[in-house]
Image 1 (cartoon, helix red, strand yellow):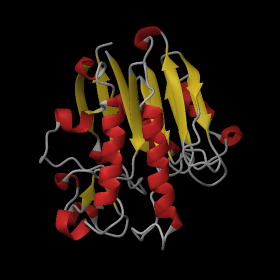
Image 2 (tube, helix red, strand yellow):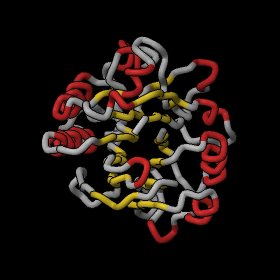
Image 3 (cartoon, rainbow, N blue to C red):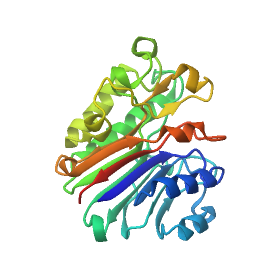
Image 4 (cartoon, one colour):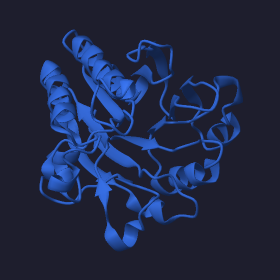
Length: 263
């Protein structure tokens, strides 16, 4: 069994103790981090090395964005796509070796898209849609069993947000974003692990704003995802979210997801 986790950590150096606690308690074989907010040469390697995550692929930059995949299983660097088309560090892909032989693991941080859901008024929103379109063209060409994970910054289903009608005009749940994400899904026939194991309309949030008291109101959204190739999906044996991390002191606004595969 191979367990793969994904977590938007919102600064890996600021929350390195929380990452260590998560790895110690949940012991995934692989962890994909987004929004590490650090350049590669300043990444905190020591803790990962100490816990046995001796294989690491880091695509970072100073202060913003950035992704990292750390693993107890051997892998080789596979790809780094610039779907943002501006050099931002938002993707790293690896090919697992050993126990996970042959699986391509894609770790992505899709742009949030700003506050206004209008390309003409908000260039960031247009960049988000264009990012997804570039991913879609890429997905049409995939020939290997793949798992794409990360912060997609879109909650596609009505039950993926606390109030569907109230959020229809809010970036992350607008119809144009959902339609664009669905085209990406259909380009490869991706299977959504979160909804395969926790079917809609069950609550399955992964993000709560710092602006609302999350435990009282539970105003969450499912922005983080793990999607498997159609030939990989039947090998999945379980999926869960670890929302206890949101109760930790000074937490990330996202919680980790874990999927287990019988590879």
